[in-house]
Image 1 (cartoon, rainbow, N blue to C red):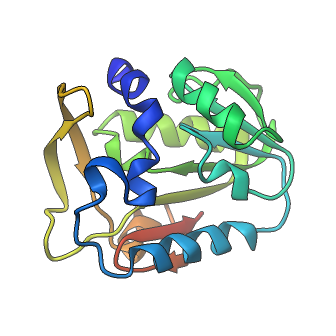
Image 2 (image 1 turned 180 degrees about the horizontal axis):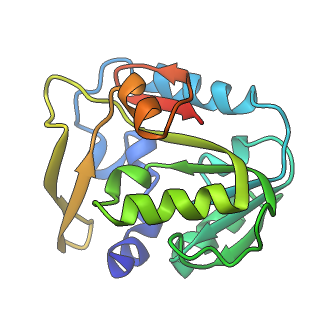
Length: 195
């Protein structure tokens, strides 16, 4: 998957912005939900936050407080530095975080948890709880037109095709999966859970 995200870095935000390959997609209420998601993040209390799988920094820039972004992709980090220059960035592995215990107040991740298969999910949550007392997860909402769990074919602008594992979440079920927590935002497209 590292190669996929390296190659997708320059076009990743097309998904959020409804541009490129996403321009013709029917996504009722999308722009309003992106704005609500950004507002929910802006409303979090300021904290020393680790943004795991920060990608292009599209959401990183909305996290209040001192932020460190981590990603396995150097290309994604280059985009993040441009888009959210106030944060510090580290190239690293989300399943083996290069930080000491309790280094952060909050661990944040967006659209990463839903790509983790069994085993990797548990490893990630162990690492998340090791470095931060609070975990905030943003991911895709379960809708009638998607399966809760699927393999998707994704096509990049260069025509390359990639298979990606993807889960969609009911917000209450995600909170239970995380061992308890509260739903900060939930809509047709996104869920935000704090544990």
